[in-house]
Image (cartoon, rainbow, N blue to C red; front, side, top):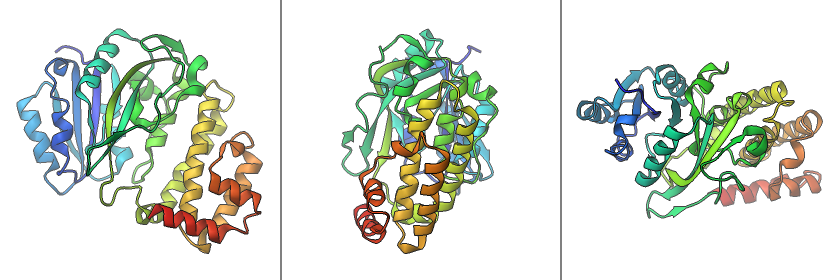
Length: 327
């Protein structure tokens, strides 16, 4: 059997309404013999696995369905890393999909490069209107598309996002960390854990990943953010410990900027509550200021800066505005 260029793990948990669109997007004759799609059902109860099995029956050389007990997004990726046969590895969630032309260009580039990390851009796609928008115009400003760079030359300029990253499989398989299971927000672990082992980076200009936004009950909803606050804290704590282990290495800058984004999210989650979480916010603020002085000033969200300037007496007002904006 011809060795695959790329393994794509598709996590599935009750995404029956969307999984056909996701898997259809990989049915691209130009590259199908070069890719492996692992559709991993995480103990779902709907028709997702059955739909995926239909693709496996029609395209057995490309699609493979794996069913497992529920363990969360991290457990699916961990399993995918174990099962992958492709030289490169990436994740496309079961309610998202890929752009056809971008996907072709990505696979073509992966055939030619030997970079440890390959970057490509992504669009947000509104679930109702279908309108595409960008979070950032360039994933790594200033990088020359198609060329390969030492990580230390470009790493601090990368906007780290799971949707933008394709890793060499041996890099993510041989690094010692595995993602937390039964936990949300592990996409940040997936992004950051391989970085100390990445030596080279390449990028293409294409927008490959199409990220569906505006779904009812999506993980960014206020109710879910409140309910999963402890899981976000868990991931943040693990990533801060990871930073402590690797802050003298070439990935330091990108770890700091990405952790500042995660910290900003944690502040916002605390502010979604009323006064009940003020003590947690103040404790985190004191910890970051004292233990992580390089990261602390990188948190520049206006609401948080206002809190700091007012000595936190404005917590109630800022919390009200954040909750109103979030709804």
